[in-house]
Image 1 (tube, rainbow, N blue to C red):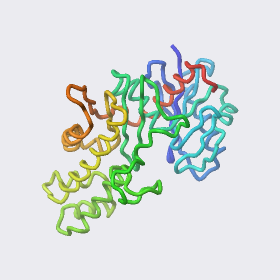
Image 2: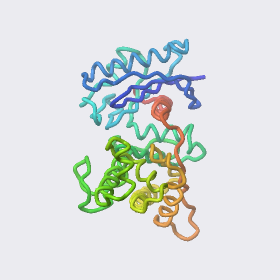
Image 3: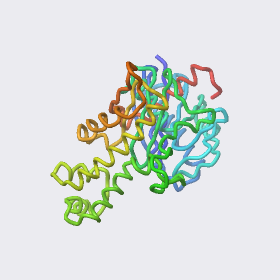
Image 4: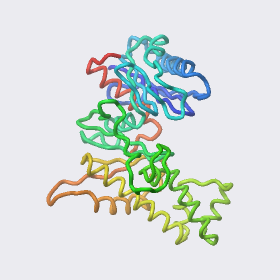
Length: 325
């Protein structure tokens, strides 16, 4: 059996684990990122955590073929650098060089959304197909595209940023600088914003009671909970959100025509109240000609392990291709 280490770099935590060549997560360790530190300190900790994960299974470093890293932002796998990382102090960070000074194994780097898509393709809800897209709904919108069982990320590893395609011209301000982006209308943060706006405009809505119970904090759950309690304002918020989301997903389907489109992130915990109308609205929008097979929409299932498993499997693919690492 061959082994690979996957490292999931986030703004709050660094997670690492050993993964088999079949995509089985064998163990998992986690430490705080402490993102205010220098990039050298953070990257050194990543290498140290990889060593600890290997040692925890009584393996030798020579038993491991490669290390894969998933990070927010844009990598340059050829150079072994992270060009930049969202919410982290990384600019052209020499990630491969620093990690290999700690643990001398081939190191490969990719975007975290791409790694999540790879995990679903190898071990998750898209393991039975070769072409899939995974949309992760969180603070932002992540998108990972798998074509013929391989990550597609463009010539510069910065592709598949569907969160920053425009749904509403001149609409809500997005963090990328544009207005009206998919992310500005369909992220969990966007649903929270829509909930707050509706609550303010409708003082008698149950939304206000639930927001107060949550110490005034907005989140993506409140609208669904108020809808379940029969609140019509909340039902309207949810319907509007699903309409926007279905537009964004239809655009993704039109672009790639994946056999499977996966939806992940905490919003998917809402189950049928989200997924039933979302499937219905979305599948009426793509340009499917008569008799053409249609994309299937599924819920992602790898959860918090997706980053580690996907990074390891991306590392395996690069190692198998004998890419410089």
